Length: 250
Length: 231
Image 1 (cartoon, each protein chain N blue to C red):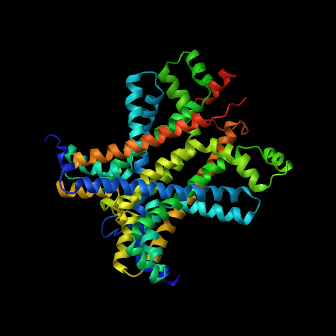
Image 2 (image 1 turned 60 degrees about the vertical axis):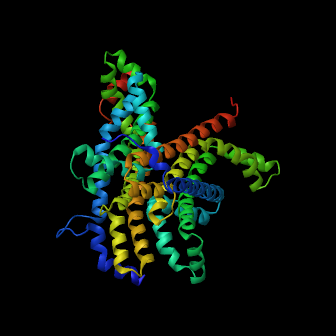
Image 3 (image 1 turned 45 degrees about the horizontal axis):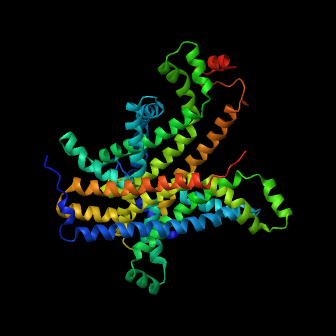
């Protein structure tokens, strides 16, 4: 325990924010930024992918389905190496490790998020779509105003879990030397040389505290969503566009 | 852009490296999967019991392995826990491919948490009255689990288990970071020697994708085969 305290005292700040403010931001802060940006940028893409996955048009359905399966079948490391190789060729200039990892996460997470959004859409009663269409909305209007808001609301716990997965996946930035938490801890380890066990215990603990708290939050959220879907919370603010349609459906 | 030249994959010792890489990848997948399934079943079994203490312990095990990146777990085993072992064992490990052993342990234990959660979901779908009925017939706790609960829970949990098998397979690529010469390692090695990046990456992509899709297809086949006609 004494060793852990000493390492935390000497290198805690490095693990938290990297060299910042005198140098580049790194450590846990960078891990968090990567995960937030990765998922936020993947979200709009994932909605488009999910719409293509439930669409009746083969020209939309097949490419989206192929992309999702490729992402689900490929190790993230492989995708990182592809992006690492192709992004500079595509842009015609050198690309930082940060951008490489971010681009990779956006593509990868978009596929996984799309499956979550699709499950959300498919778990809604068909009556929702039919009712919306019958009051004169077009397919896209019904999707945008009725189906998607509910699907996405119902899927917020799953998306929070995906955020936890994304945080864990940023650790692969290590292989392309992005100065996130895992890379920073490895640097601390090679500076100290003789204390690998405490260093990696600290590393695992930091991830655990962050991810476990978010997992617990996701569970609470799931209970709330389940209660609301079961209609136990009456009078509470329902997601936009829900009340009118619920009235129509009843 | 230059035309693709796959002949590089047949030059020098590249074929040997690829064959070794694929073999190690499959071995890693097999051993880790076995560890994950056996341990996952035991954990689910313990959690089904009535002991609060055991349930808490299994819960902690599952939470730790699900909330720490697998790469970090591999590092902790290979760089950390390895140094705590008695020196005789450490030397034996070094001589017998310790990195492979630690990668198998780390990936297997991490996946055991997901497998046990999948099975637990299946077990919870079985009405408790079934267990009571079987117990009333004179079967003991273990027999009830083996003959009645597990076969049904397994079927219900199958899609989740397949999903995590694919993830386990994909995650064996993480072993390259500690120097296990599996497929991803071999790919990087050949790439850095030949600079035929696209060719070798395409091959690796095809291998990973092919096996992943095979696991998914095998999974849905098993699901259909094992399905029991219900009301």
